[in-house]
Length: 301
Image 1 (cartoon, rainbow, N blue to C red):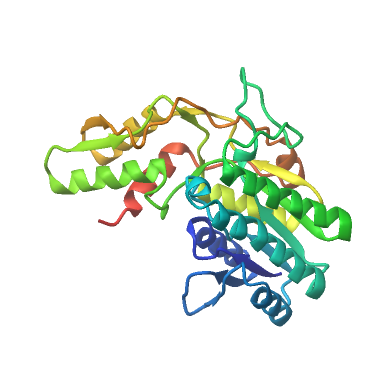
Image 2 (image 1 turned 90 degrees about the horizontal axis):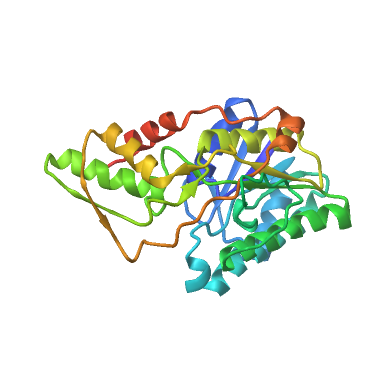
């Protein structure tokens, strides 16, 4: 298939384009950043998105493009909604008019769900309880995609991935922020101090390479009008993740709690993946230790 990937130059996007190309798909990249082999435009520019879809006539699209930095929902809510919701709407409209039979995967977020209680696993019909503006923008885009499948008979699905980590991740996320600080300490050869937030929070962390494999399988085999959770179902304490990264780095820094990073103890939702496994055979395969090792090794100081 000829597959358009929006957000192709982002963390997951770069892994996804390699995953798709490795199994023989023709990949067309799109991003708001510029690289020579990537179409450049803003998702908020309705006309440019329409012209792009009309020009390249993709068989499918994995829509990763959007703002992924959660705190920006509060600092610039208008931007977050205009990119995450209106950008998605512009893309869906472009396909509705130019390529209505194309397969489309709108990538949403696990943050649309409430925190699970008592070990409960949340399936795709679970109650949505977004904790912030970012999550609200993702719910809106998610449900808009499913609405286009129902209203217009388009082949649109949504994916709801949990936190993912791995090589190439921005240091604005917790695991990569730890890895970056530890790499600096290790390379300095001097004792150092690591700034942290709340180490008691718990996260379900899936390797980005497993996540993009899920995206590929969904664009190949998923069912239109359906949403799919992507997770491991296993929660790990952030402090334990830090201990593992310290062991990988071979350092034992002093730990300093930064009030600017500290949030009340919370946990990722525990998500049921029975639906995606039944549809595609997907399950996470990369062990967390391998994810953390590869993340640390990818850090360039």
